[in-house]
Image (cartoon, rainbow, N blue to C red; front, side, top):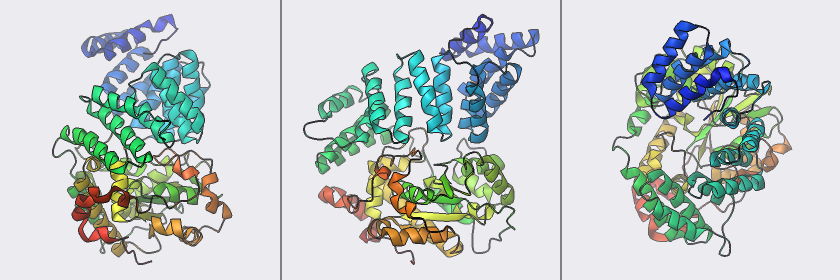
Length: 533
């Protein structure tokens, strides 16, 4: 809880404490009383914003927090709250501007320092986040999560030893911090002489009733067993952990089929393209997660004319705002179906405007949100000059890599990864959608590239990528692993190493344990998808 030194703001502190306890009605009543007494008092607007945020009304919360900022432009806490909720809404430019505004103000509270660090982290500025996380720890070293946040940003920046230290500090304060455990195990290879297998199994059993904790511990156990080359056991632990999570979900937790069907209707052979209003040509890199999207992003963003904006929810968020569909999901079939009628030039202008800060002055920018493959048709309509690159990878390796990965639990988009057969179905639907895009999108705007080809023929494929993006040849793109820009994805460790072929055909190490997956994939399991290259 934020601790504010100004005695005039003790009501804010007390109100926030009551909100944390779920006492919304009395706080709401007190806030209205304060507004009647002084309409420019920032405290009640912040309290009402906190209540709105707690109830998921982030648009209203942002309006209230911003009003508090306008009435108290020297109080850093209001900047922090407003910026944080803006990141939830996907308004990254505005969130960063507020965080930058807070930078010139004195920060005496560890919670506020940590919150500003979170804002910078969510907006992709991890180099700016680290000093605030360090300040939070310096002001109050007790909370485990302050150390965890510091560790995550250090990992994304490639400072793996510092990340390890921060995760270790997290666990010294909270031995049960499951996210710190899974992050720490993911940093390096476990060995027979140096592993935490027994501790992790004990923690899994102790937290077996907490599906999220069990999922994290189960993945950490599976990663350890895989490092020890005990592959069948590793898969068994994944099954065990993921089964708990899937069983806790509603049967219709996410309607993937509707999304794939609706996506195809957003651009067909009869779709007319509006004249492009922008000369900007962002580069969208997408595909199934864990199939090489980060690798291609690092290759292209190693070019001196290109900067990576990371994985942005920006385009999907703009579509959601424009359609105003009733669902509580940013990305779903209803929203995609409604997007067919949108004037996409407007979306294109908004995208360019909203990513200007993330472009950091570079001539070109990459956006590597994997699930943007649902939006390829809409992206082409909104930004006809944009380049669309989709990663393809062998079906068995693609499905296994998705199943092995612990994705964020914040969104339901990755629910298919809790079951191998569901993963196979998702891959099949993805493959059909890519066939559709290949048939209807122009070849000079939509490109498929195989992960395996990049690994075995790096220079030829790198030249092909640069030519497609209308970029000159640059040797730095061959040394992508030397790129020092942050990587806030599951590949943050791997992409800082030269190419290696060890992950190709990984599924064969599991023996007959993946026969069910192979059967579910059918003909798709037999090799790499041909893409007409």
